[in-house]
Length: 506
Image (cartoon, rainbow, N blue to C red; front, top):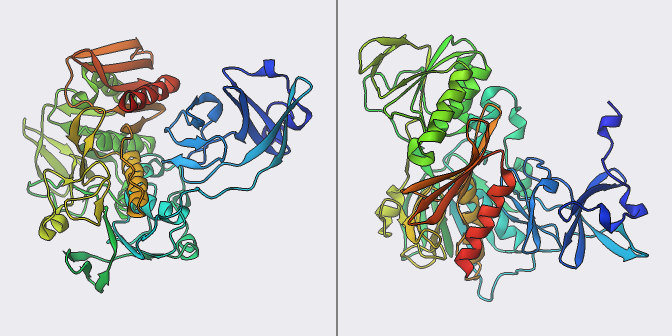
């Protein structure tokens, strides 16, 4: 066991031959630290070997535009500074000095972490208020302090827990393979240390856009800049029994805790909805060896987003693990022990989890008179129709330069990246939000990555084999690739993201 803990590769302080690089990368070590050497053009960089998000191996990632991207969830790190320039990673990586002499490459001392280099512009706001305690709100607050914002940051959340890693709530944590102390995005002490005034269990009831004040359940708060990041809430079923104690939706840590608590004694679970959230819940509860039935109106799970072949694969994958599907059907009533199918018959149910989608929380914006069209309408800088008020995350409909359409998506990474861009723009940096949408979904041991956005397509080009779990699917309209999904083709997924970004820039 002691040998397994040793860092891999050569001792980089002793020097390595340039011919040892593979695809311009080489993993070695400096003392106990695993270090990734990267050749980018004529320069050599030394950076921490693992992503600070989920510890993904950066040697398997992609080097582009002076940065290295994680193969798992597309976090991005500056090779010179180690800064986590794109979510879902927030913590910087260590970097080391590199020396080339006598035909060899040597790694020397570790550098000090520099600042981001982007200070607030002149006339920057003193008081910034963030409404929302999810991905976008957290990312914005973190980026404000990273960019040396000296003024106040008040973060208002109606949740009873500080921001958590929400994707884990339906994946490893729900499955019982991740402890709860992995979930917080930051410790409670970290907010105090960063002088971020996080106020939980606080509801915002109104915005006075002229006076620049918020009305909350605890009084009024003034602001110079405001970020709305209220997120979305699960759709509730309008059927008898939907409000019974054993019927749950999954959005918050409290929701996941409640499902876990009931799962301890449940023999059979009915999941309503074959969405990403519904099927991730199904996979997690199967990991707990509970019988799972999935009821959904569509012919194939996820076909609307991933297409028929991937939809058939997802269904077969879940059936291999014992999930029983009732497709092209719905639940009409729920009682204490069973759920009734529209097609006739009933399903015993000790626990029911509803995963039929979410709806953006727009009431606050609508009452304040902000422009709303199936989401809060923002410009390319994520500013709403009212100057000084920005929006990010699931509530936002923004002009997507890749698709050429105004879109709204409900992706964790998109929300985080929008929060980061909104933070910089609140400090006076006129930065367009042009990140390519990305999300991942985990089903048992199979990850599905998705880059881009395609609501409609006229062709799906398949490279590899979906059945063999080794594939890239390209969703095309009029010959143009709008989106790419993949299974175990991480490098292709990263290359697709870069290609889309460069197409925007060209």
